[in-house]
Image (tube, rainbow, N blue to C red):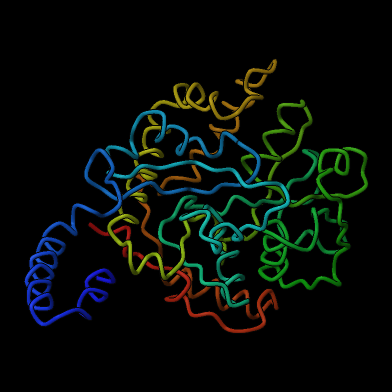
Length: 349
């Protein structure tokens, strides 16, 4: 068009001639515009997308490794690239900078980020069950969250899902932080519990408890609540509301690929461990595969509904309860609407 404008300054005849050429060019441009868009994936879906995960490759991401290795993302119609964050990178930094299109994060972390003004939204459930639990020595007399009164409890720090889980346990048991001794132990859970520095730790059922068992240390888990219901949502697939609004079909394809990856991992755990070897170098170490298999076995129940089925849809009422709990506990200082933090558009056909 700039070339046309420069020539229109010439004589009347030239103007009429160029006008005709311009109209022809415009019509051709409109008819060909669809052909000039970004390349499509082999299945006719969206273009290349980057899926972000934490900076340490881990068997807990097996469904994504399986989905890429087995072509499940391609079958869903999306060209997916997996990216593990740098160790000094914020959880949503790359997403908000446009370096990632989707990222795995805790639902509670999504709500926290939105309260701080970040444009993030959950579009698909990854873990259906909150993985945080209380871990105590096997011979401990702690059998419920109420038994934590007057006890020393180890947490990595006053942040993240372990900290949120402790707040849930105390709240449901009618205890306050002053009723217990909270010890920030970093990531020394094993040493802290076995040396008696703390009487209980807050950890992951599919990580810390598995590691204790692998080391031959007799421990057991205690649920955060007597009912088993936790007012928090664990890992979800996240994007920005802006991208969701403009790439709804792509989002559906990414969620579909993730969901199929979960199903394939559950159906063939051994094959999932094999697929993960490409992404997790430590699996080649002595005992690496057996450790990964144990973690995977403990993770499978987190992906499924009670009847064993898999889906990515999210429970809006559960998100309402989480937003309310986090505000009451002071985890967030400004209210967040559940409908802004989660969106099931990508989980529906």
